[in-house]
Image 1 (cartoon, one colour):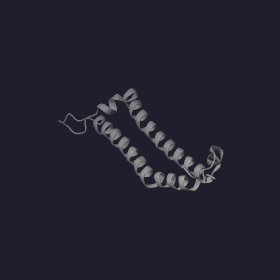
Image 2: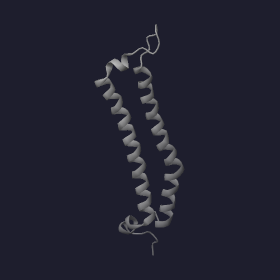
Image 3: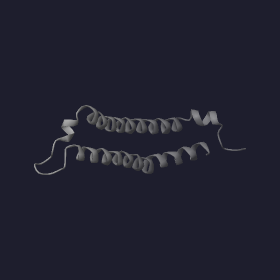
Image 4: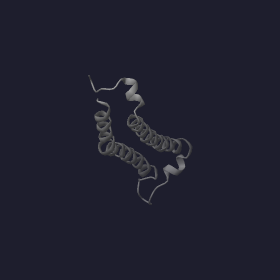
Length: 104
């Protein structure tokens, strides 16, 4: 007789539920951070152009908007890196444990 569980048994498994909850939590948190970051930058562009157009130093062409735009891109990479680190160090291990437990 096969040691594999039915789909219903898999979905009811507490380890599987925990895995799904953790994945959903990190996905939603990072998505919200990214949306706030991106739409915050877009809102600055739309509603406060004079702030973004301020020069950082006299005689230089660099404005406040440039480092904010670069920061937006940088933090998008950071959020992606956080997810990749979590997936490689936590999620993959948890998936293996659930597969071993439920016969996947």
